[in-house]
Length: 119
Image (cartoon, rainbow, N blue to C red; front, side):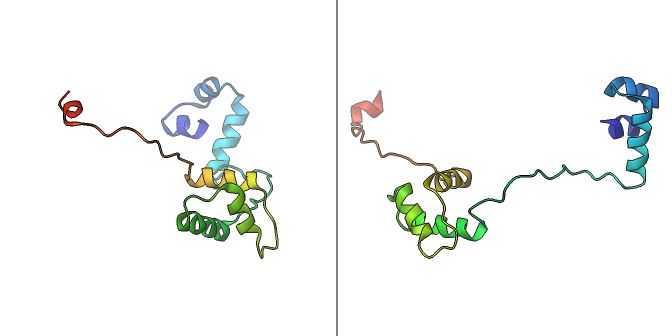
């Protein structure tokens, strides 16, 4: 916000009032941006790496497409066969949801007659 407000033509005092911080902080941030020490990306977070990497995701997607009626437990046992790192069924379920593969149930509905379609 500081960089955008200053680039728009705002003074140091106006920027400090807009962002609700000190003038010194505005000067420091703007100078750092001018000299290229500030990057426009968020800082990485300290989280554990995912248990299922990209290669395992592709394998999981292939397994789901090969047999669409498999359960999460069956997919988990298939993923853990011959793997060095075993994953839980919850991890597999979360990965499937992240990939956009959601479970659907087939619903039998009565067929529409000509009278229904006319209405």
